[in-house]
Amino acid sequence: MNTLDSAAALPESVDLAVIGGGPSGSTMAMLVARAGYRVLVLEKDTHPRFHIGESLLPHNMPIFRRLGLLDRVKALGVAKPGVDFTPASEPELVSEIRFSQALEVPVDCDQACQVLRSDFDALLFAAAGEAGAMLAPGCRVRSVEFDTADTALLELERADGRHSLQARFVVDASGRDCFLGRRFDLQARNRQHGTAALYAHFRDVPRRSGDAAGNISIYWFDQGWIWMIPLPDGVMSVGAVCNPAYLRGRGRDVTRFFHATLARNPHAARRIGDARLVSSVTATGNYAYCNHRLDGPGWLMIGDAGLFIDPVFSSGVYFGMHGAEVGARVVLAELAGDAPAARRARRRYRARVRRGVRELSWFIYRFPTPAMRKLLLSDQQVLGLKQAVISLLAGDLYDNPRVRWRLRLFRLVYWLTCLPELAANLKVRRQGRRNASVVFDHGH
Ligand SMILES: Cc1cc2nc3c(=O)[nH]c(=O)nc-3n(C[C@H](O)[C@H](O)[C@H](O)COP(=O)(O)OP(=O)(O)OC[C@H]3O[C@@H](n4cnc5c(N)ncnc54)[C@H](O)[C@@H]3O)c2cc1C
Image (cartoon, rainbow, N blue to C red; front, side, top):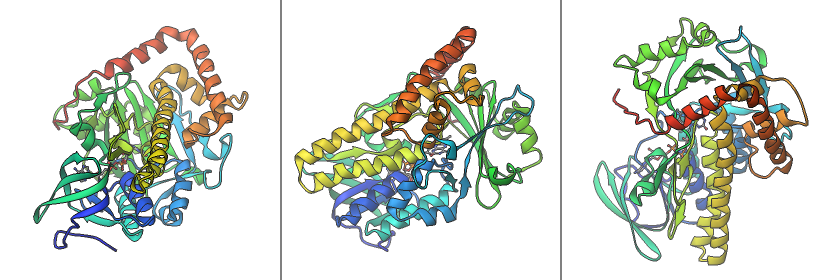
């Protein structure tokens, strides 16, 4: 494999420079390197390294198959057959959604997988190398200039000093660092929605019984919701996504605050019991943003580098890898010098990224409302609406007209469900918009 650590010379020029070796960047690198181009992935960290975002979606599984990685990813993770929901107010009520009950279940999409991102990201990064991409771990991109029409000049920093690199095309896959978004001043905060999160790893948290053992569990509480994600080796990822204003009150002892937050849902607190905290507690906030543009001459943004809404439906890795697949067509057409194909591919890329996010955002913004809670907990099966929502939660967001019309109808049902408690539902939505303007400090 072509790993260029700080003792190895970096190339002076490549066809494609990928900024960031997370899931989006590694996927892009694999696809373009397999087409025979010279690809260099620049990753400021060295794998394996911690990253949040551990629960994957069923529709990510066919992507792994296309990449030839399905068995390796499955071997790495915990199978995730569904999601269960437990509100604070109900006596031990657990409502479960199984991905196998979606409106349509394509091959490999009856379940997903949950992974330690350190291992998962390392696997994808290595797979990019196996596909022929050059890998530069511990190499940070400091600047990019698009001076001439067909070449970008990148300044890189490694342990052995500064380097220059010429690239015919640049893909920004730098995650929430949003390298090009900041460079071009394209970033905009989402004004509809804002949340903050606390998360950590535990051991000895009991799993659900039987074949539900790999379920992601969601617990609502008055200030947000809690996730429990079963991971390999008996680890449970636990996080609380809350109103940013609530999280600002966390004080110096963030671990204590985290436990107090988990206690806001008695069922979650009981399940955590005396489980051992085996990592530090991290606080992060205000992560909903988008860029005014996702592409330009000589560059493309993919994954979180382009936009991010919210972790609630575990869509981040899927959006990033799907975006890399669709975006790779832009890169391949550009590198082949096929301008009409590149224009078409760019239009398709923009439309697809925006469509997926738009579809999911509607649900994300309304997830904390009492009406949405009621609908998600309901067992009623009318016109396949519930199955369509399961399809959405599985990642069936783009091409399925049977899902799409049902999701439109679901919106109407949502509004009708809101009516009896309209004030309470609108209050929660207003709170969501107010959250978007809270300034979050990462002080602790
Ligand atoms: C609280 C929270 C919970 C989440 N939970 C989930 C979940 O359960 N499921 C899910 O699918 N998603 C989840 N996400 C989202 C998920 O973390 C991201 O969507 C996903 O990691 C995006 O992948 P990426 O490859 O685009 O970016 P990243 O995974 O962030 O990778 C970007 C890479 O770029 C590198 N980099 C950055 N700048 C530079 C530079 N200048 N030079 C070189 N390298 C650079 C970074 O080191 C990093 O390795 C969650 C997010 C948050 C905030």
